[in-house]
Image 1: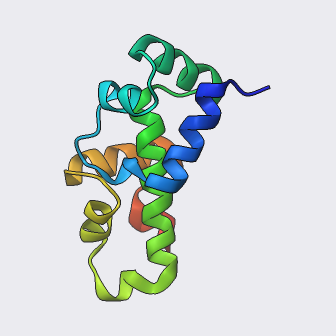
Image 2: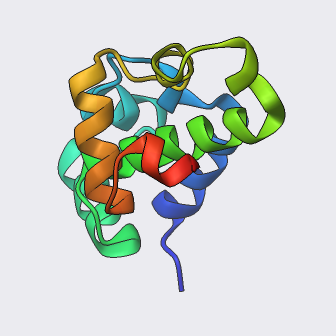
Length: 110
């Protein structure tokens, strides 16, 4: 059974899409959920099997893939799609993508 914090976190990410904020912190997210950072961090680790950064980056990567599949890859560069998905650097995007998907963004999309 998912905890109340996990349910509220899923809902917040779905509705408010806070992961699109490039500088989102664990502290800010905890404030939005009216909990403390230790509780939130523990919930993310237990529920999603990831730390805060990996969790947020996984949401950003899914957003990037969604935008690409919607055809925005024809209008925008991959890096601009990454920035639109909440990443604030090319290096972070590429590193996170490879960590989560096991290949580079370009390889994945081909």
